[in-house]
Amino acid sequence: MTGTTVASVIWHRLDRDGTDRCRLARLDEGWLIVGHARWDEAGETAALDYALRCDAGWRCLSADVTGLHGARPVACRITRQDEGFAIEGQVPVRGTDLDLGFTPAWMLVPLNRLDLPHARPFGVETARLRATEGGRLEPLGHSFARVRDGLDHAIPALGRDARLRLHETGFVIEDPGLWHGVVTLER
Image 1 (cartoon, rainbow, N blue to C red):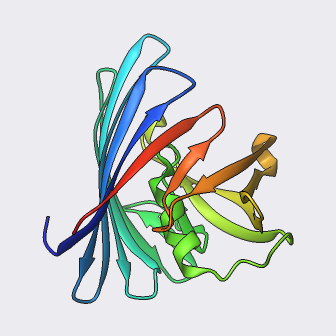
Image 2: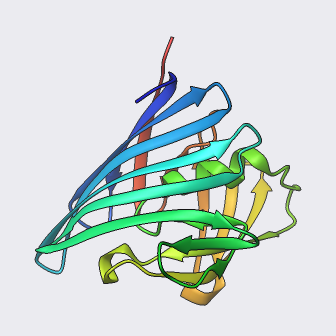
């Protein structure tokens, strides 16, 4: 990984066996988020590595996801195109942000870019990666609102509403029922 590492986080899944190890690096012209997610799902092991590249203003430019879901290989190169994102050879999907779907690391991007109002939901349209289904993107809306003891996060299409806790870096450190993380700042 090039650049200067700013922080790292280790998340433990709460809904099944699994971990996600992630590093945030400051580059000359932006940010790099690199991680390694491992978990068990329906009797299969998933092992996905990811890299998200952002400009200095926390606008996601591209991502790579590689690894295995069970015996199926996963290899996706995702790039920003006009008003959304596209996997090579596929039609672009509208979205301001890229939701990797299997890791909370992607939330670092909008949470560092947006000045979220207190107690008022702010909608974020994403292109969500379905890596475990052969690698395809689909639109998915999220809603974030700052509250006194964290951040409310809703995904209406999935029927999910949660109160997240954040680290000063913007990393999610608690997503009830899904993730618990510990952040280490690099000195």
